[in-house]
Length: 539
Image (cartoon, rainbow, N blue to C red; front, top):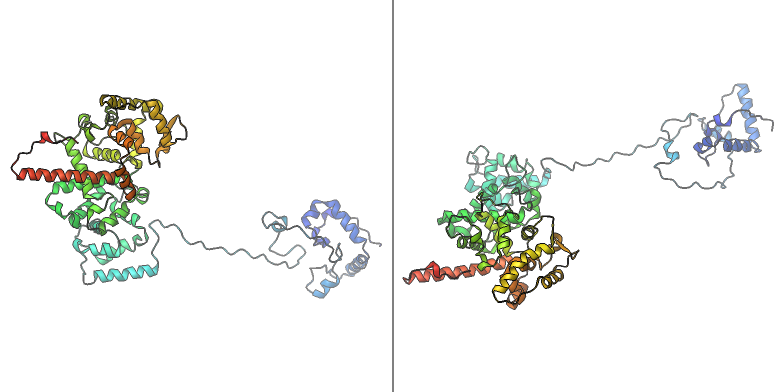
């Protein structure tokens, strides 16, 4: 072959070599390989006629037709350059992902430098992501919206001026699906101008257009009760709910003649709600806490149950009666305040002086009475709920803070021994066989099974069914002795009603005892005998 090539192979476009089996980028990055391949191509027998034909055409002024540059398929096939590899003998390329591959990175959407019509790469279709965040809540679907509007029109038909507050309860119950005693709070939330009535348009604007329709019931109640400028509920926000409950619930009608006890009942319910639901204990009940608690379920139960005493969570009148009477028994001067000497008499002197001192040091909870050395009614509610149900998480946290003298989050041997010493002394005074602290400590370790036997953490106590006995051993002698004797009757009661809490059982027993004493007092007064409080048996 008499064709000479003296040019620099590296300066050629690698695509001119027409080697589909190799990447152009690989040829450009390896000039020696490209040179050897080009020399081998020139040595092929079928290459010489093609090159001579191209040279003659170039001398004659005929346009060059390199493969891919001619629009004629025939020309393209006749002048196509031979491949380096025989047909079917090319090795397969290794599979590559589209991301990071040079073959994909160097793709061009326009025509190549040779003018060959490359296929345009289709741009990926942009997926339309639907809106998933709505500042004021997700708008209701049209079907639900239309159904709700139809129901609204039925309730407001014939009331062009709107509904008054006593007529609004059915709307709250049937359309909003909320407890009926939320009605007055919802009414006043819509009637911002205090006009005394709510029109159809005002209700639709608040409930439907305000997207309240699609919110869960906890968010609905939270939004209705809270103040507009706050992100939490306070105790005052529950007052209109309790007033409505007292005015309308059939199980509380007997209290309507005694407004003072209505107020005390409402206060007690609110204190119990914040004790169990407001886990941070700061008086600010958040939406997260409301959703995690069982208050909404208790509200719905109270709305459906005519016997309020069957609503054991928060609303039971019998539970209020027990709390109030126990407070009244201790508050001898009836100034609605309790001091250390009053509290030490609780449970027939069950508590030690050292634990009472810790309570009045306000370590577990700061008093709301704002009087030095005095515990108010709200403080007593927190105390009695903690004392009578030591398996509840608020109770465990309450007593853990009392025993944790240095506040480092662990209960050490020395801290527990400090409180048990008084228990040991009381056993000796009562002629009971004393149990040494070393023996008690071994028993406690077996009961709780802490991660580290040298100390106890709050995590060790939570979820353990014997955590209440752990604290009773340290500062409540009566319950400690009861735990040691293991009354079979009480054990059988617990097995028969596993859903009842320690507080539920205590309140039931105390209510029976208090009601029997009241009946005896009434019988004594009816027979003409003078009741002497000094003869009353200690509790």
